[in-house]
Length: 279
Image 1 (cartoon, rainbow, N blue to C red):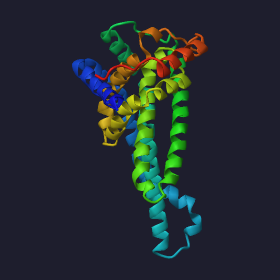
Image 2: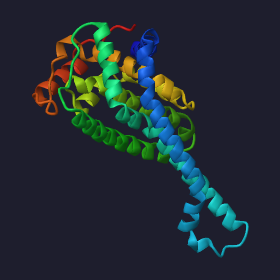
Image 3: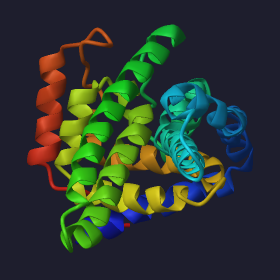
Image 4: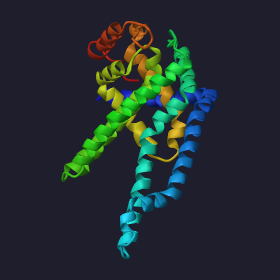
């Protein structure tokens, strides 16, 4: 249980870090604002076009009498817009990190620099980093989608669906949200997605302590935009303590190093090395 508090502590530390470095807070806001404008425009367009889309998708109901025609199409319109809103929520972080890759990379490096020690660099060209980030984000979203389908089905189980399932849903969201955010720092340390997941699984409570409160906060409109810079900073602090200075130089297949050595280093951190003390 101590790790839960430690994970939340990293989230708070990240917000404090950007609070002390106001220029980086403003710098880190730009990707979120750009993504917010794009998503808002897409949702407005969907809001205006959802009814036409439903009309074209249900020609079989043209001859239905009132009120069944209106009831069917209104329900489907609401569902289409709701599904679009759901997709916006679960993809916002991944798209913001992709759009803001250069921004958050620089912010994460600055956190490493101010905290002392070596500042790892991936050594990859920007296009390669963007490709890796996009590919890994799709893989994470597929995992989230599979868990969501399972939890949706379990939601119909009496009692369990109204109590345990929502809690598990927030845990899944928080866990993968933490993975997406720590990826900014861990990719610079030569870790592929498989290694990152292994590392986070070794400290589940620490990961959930960081990701679940952030996921809950992201449910509030516009909050995600303003918390993203601090979330990236906090995730970098979390990644520093998870990896430890003895593993900073681990390489992998993506960065030209030895993937087996990287995996061995991750396993050692996740399974043997004692975790950092709670802050």
